[in-house]
Image 1 (cartoon, helix red, strand yellow):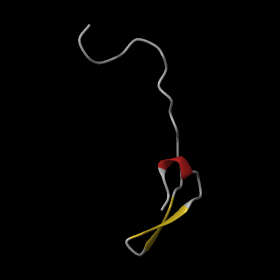
Image 2 (spheres, one colour; image 1 turned 45 degrees about the vertical axis):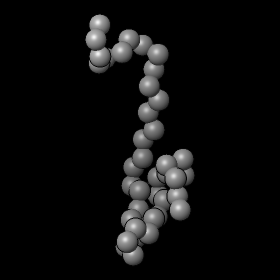
Image 3 (tube, one colour; image 1 turned 90 degrees about the horizontal axis):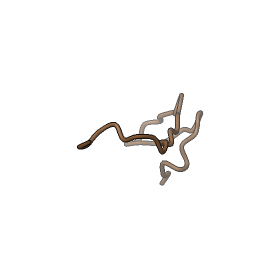
Image 4 (cartoon, helix red, strand yellow; image 1 turned 120 degrees about the horizontal axis):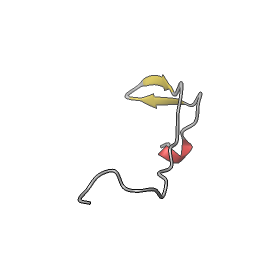
Length: 40
């Protein structure tokens, strides 16, 4: 079983007996700026 930490471009997974390949994976880390939602 793969976790999201294992995701990378080109990874091939078997889901419900079918092969799926990750074509593009982008990891985004949230910054420490102002929050964009919630009460101000």
